[in-house]
Length: 485
Image (cartoon, rainbow, N blue to C red; front, side):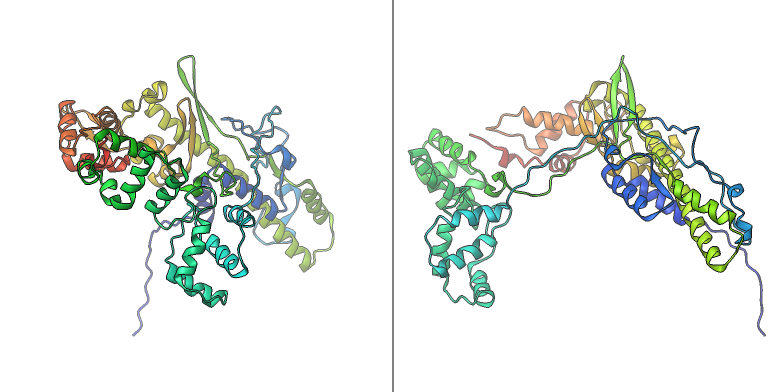
């Protein structure tokens, strides 16, 4: 026999609006600008109060004005019940202002230029090559990466020439054309390895004893050179320490990535727009929220007139009902978007203001050793928000400070105990570690064991493996690779 029973279950689910709000909070300023533009294009009930040319601003504003003469639409404006059974258009404010009349349009011009590969092709036009050699050279130039190297083996290039260009040549022919490509500027372009790149550059220089020795070292002892086995190099090449030092100096002045030096390289330049600004005014911290790309939003006047027209209409046809349903959906979307923008700005401001006060001593001095240990939960507990919300703010937002523009998440760090039992930031330990390594004797760099001992003497008892981890996070090589002569 089939038994039926009722079961009550309580569950929490995010509404589509809440999900969209979380996405808005996560967006940095430039992406948020694109999101605003998209919404204005897609929702005819939503309009910007200023011309598009006036909405580009780099000013900062931490206020949220609610204009007294906002355009407002409510259920009294149109009797929705004539068209729909239960729904109504709720009252809401339809305008928010985040701009000053003195705001200026600020933009950064970018110079246009030819690509790196085209720059090399233009140089090939000045070299005499027959048709086959030209086709090979053009193919080789097309294989040059942004660093200036040809990473593919010659046998693979030979196969590609046969299959794609119908050119059948041996490796010797390709290598002879490659020599022509390697004579192009910048010096070192077309190299297949780092040592070849450096040797090409050295051969372009005035040939003096130090340069000739540098070439000899790279050709015969490149592995020992990269591992800084200086004693073995001195013994193998029968040279003095001063001679080796001069040769190393020649090598250190070379460019390991010749493609990166090309000024016309038109790779995308990322322009960071800070979301916040912190200034010190009369010894106190002042936080402002970037008001860029938050235009005055309001319901379209034409849309309001259209609603009035449907209100005055005496005929209640199905097409009019469908039209009003469409209008209601767009009005609800406009209301939510305007409210979401305000909520986004308030969430950002409250979160950053709490972070600023938590790290007040650092922001007043700029001394990274005064950064307090701080995790996401510390801030979330103070502002009574979820940790995920704080994470969305911290991971993608920048703050402009008197000490530079920095990613907010960089101010978060774990805590460690010093000898006094006090919590200190791991960033403080990394800063001290960086300073100690910077002041070390380069002829005898400090090992991780010695670094751990020095930190312990300064009141930070951490293990050697922890020192090695922090050193790697700072991008500092091991002691042997820091050695100089």
